[in-house]
Length: 221
DNA sequence: CTCCGGATCCTCT
DNA sequence: GAGGATCCGGAGG
Image 1 (cartoon, chains in turn purple, yellow, orange):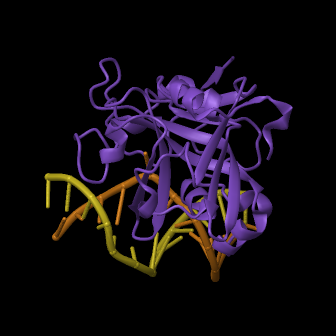
Image 2 (image 1 turned 30 degrees about the vertical axis):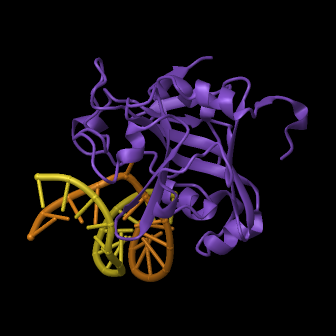
């Protein structure tokens, strides 16, 4: 987990600057990134393999009916209206948490939902938090699974993902083979193929199930 | 492997 | 008061 190979961007100032862009363009860059949460029980790190972009309501070209911010600011989505690099964690279906990393300039209200990843540090702790997981690759193979493996709850919403107890390291180069397609579980027009804003590393075994949406476009770096 | 129902409560209308 | 950016276990092919 030490960036000794020097092929990761670890400076929080630089990472935050990179996150200031359009989440759809950042997606190939945040895939293969490593997010770490140091809890009292120890660290857990996940290499991100699947994300979804959600745009802000004021986006001139692509207002996003699938986004939690489509209806404007609320108490829950407040972190999304803030600066990039912070966490937006929400509770859903009565039992699950899901985590986003805020993107774009301050106030743009766009973000990347962390949909899946591979646990690369803290396997044992992640397995304790995910007793239902049968295999290593299932520890974080879904948005609520990923949040659970990292120990994220709404207590973490609004926290800086680039500062203790978190860290986020970006790869210096975009992930080589990125596929995209419609987002999962988004009802209404935001779930149509006009919004192919789900991005994943092709053929990675940790990418979540619910692959009903077939790959539509390839993003060639 | 796929399909299906139940769990469970916060958030906004 | 309705519904959700979901997961899990069991049944059946």
